[in-house]
Length: 216
DNA sequence: AACTCGGGGCA
DNA sequence: TGCCCAGAGTT
Image (cartoon, rainbow, N blue to C red; front, side, top):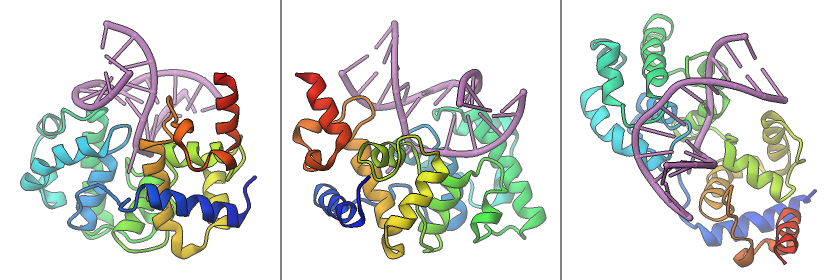
């Protein structure tokens, strides 16, 4: 397991590789961000942005989404995977916002995860990006990179990964770290073809060493 | 813990 | 073409 200073070194190297890592979702306000993050499950943010560009022109309030039929909303997000479920979730989410939260997006993780289609990862992104609260959202990239680098244990659950990261990384760096790990995971430490041969962290990376040895 | 949803991106 | 993916809900 990597210690705190080793992790700090890794994060610094990732910053060199991806200096402008940031949330790539179009978000003009918390409500749009919730919709965008919900849509982003299991598909790239580039695709989400393509869809939300038109979507946010057409809909801007919970009432707007409820003013059309489910079928129409589904058609509007058709090009995104899992669109049928996501459209249903958006509708029931909007209903809940209106009945329980006065039409406003709640600002706490605990309230956010109660919304349909909003899980722990989505809630963390929202509080971090929309409300500026320190948060460390663990998605597949963050989980994979953390495990390969032995920042956490290989067998850790998603929740355990999040706890470990929060323990080993200073609070003020959580939000930055989240985006660094994601960029690093998406573009370099890829799930199927990690670029171990040109990785500045290879020396520290047990999984990378293993992979390089296997190649020979 | 395993399964399902799903169109688009990429090899 | 086939395989995989910035997750969440259900069983």
